[in-house]
Length: 620
Image 1 (cartoon, rainbow, N blue to C red):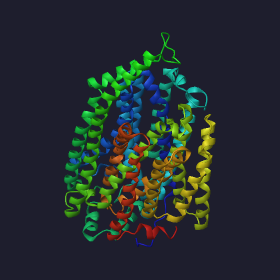
Image 2: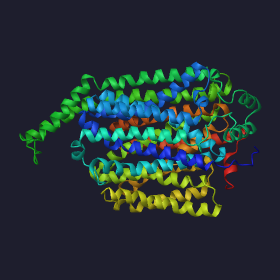
Image 3: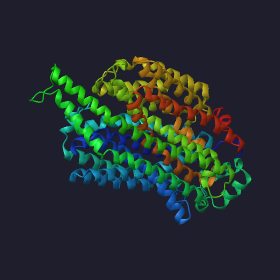
Image 4: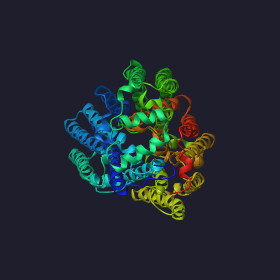
């Protein structure tokens, strides 16, 4: 296929695949009820509740690493051998097994079993994500792959947005805001039925996807139009030595040539594990136990003999409160600093390890597999940073909004802002998905302006339907307009789009760091708008030109979702040391790397003869 010729999109397969993306978002929404239910039902403390998210994000890393190790042992790329279609089906079946484990664990009252069940569900998601994202790229021209991934992400965000309403209706008979008391009174039978339905949905979607004749097998090297064109396209743009090897083993990939990559990832994993062990152990230390007891004593000081809060404390009670607070600070500061040191050590291991692989892979390509491509190695770090900053901002917004200078909102008032942050991802992804359709350039320009505004209205509408006051969010439309302007400026050029949105992310963090009130809140919320298109842009740029290593590279990228388990707690611990607002400097640093990656990867791809931006800019 010539460089100027574009492959047509398989819309039948694309439609079926996007239903899977919607399903992921809908299922994830169930956790908004399931996690607080577990906190109450299993009587979890704060540390134990953190294990829920940690188990989920860790499973992505372990699952993708396990796929790579297994492929290396058997001597072929297992996802490439199965094909993307079968891999997604197997992933859905694996997730169904996890749903069964969660049902059994809730019924028997075993929290560890629930974590295992959630871990199994996420392992299935890991296999699905590893397959679905490159599959989206293969369903049309490689240069427009980010648009199709954006479409999938937009549908996923729609599922996440309406999912909580559907789950609330199913469990409580209302779409209004769910209170803690409602969750505490939730019948165990209803939770079991909910996740029985979830397991059934996993099986149903697996059947829909597996038996669909519209969806090709997704095997590179087979006699399907979808794969032959991609191989021809990649053969035109890769260096001669890489091209010749692509045609030799296109269907399976030469995983035995990636032993250096395997060794590096295993070493990084072990070192990161060594950094996390002291962090988890610290929660069982005598100092941590003393903090729990002192916190209970501090709360008791302000309560009368009937357990009611005392309005005015006596002098003696105030002195006691002051003494306990001082003792808590004395214990907490060194404990948090120690945790911060080990968490930072894990971050240094991952960043340093990937940069080391980047430089070694440039010098000697043999033995590195997909990691011989600099765009992939730097893209792995970009995915790590992107997922980390997205989750970190979403996780820390609630604490920020409780502060007096940022509104002093109560728990029930925070929900609309959190909903808008995650809704911002849908707004951006819907806009980014417009180019996935075969429309005239004029129609695309009109939709590029209208669609984000419609999505913004839907987020407000769903939030109001849930019973929340959305009036503080009306002027957030100005941030949406800024994003719309950015879409017109970047004109669907992946590297340029990522760079501009990265710079806007930096600007948003700086405005939030240097201001207070609603301006700062809007600035931090807008990070969701600027994060929205980053996953597909990073994914398509990182996999460009990998040929037979595409599924292996996809597994490496999915592995880096681990950023969601490392960067958020680092910001959380940093906030204990320097303050919640100041901790958002982590976001500024992350966006700075993403902007750098966009600029640098463009030059890397250009040297390989791949010109994404120039090809996409003409419209299609």
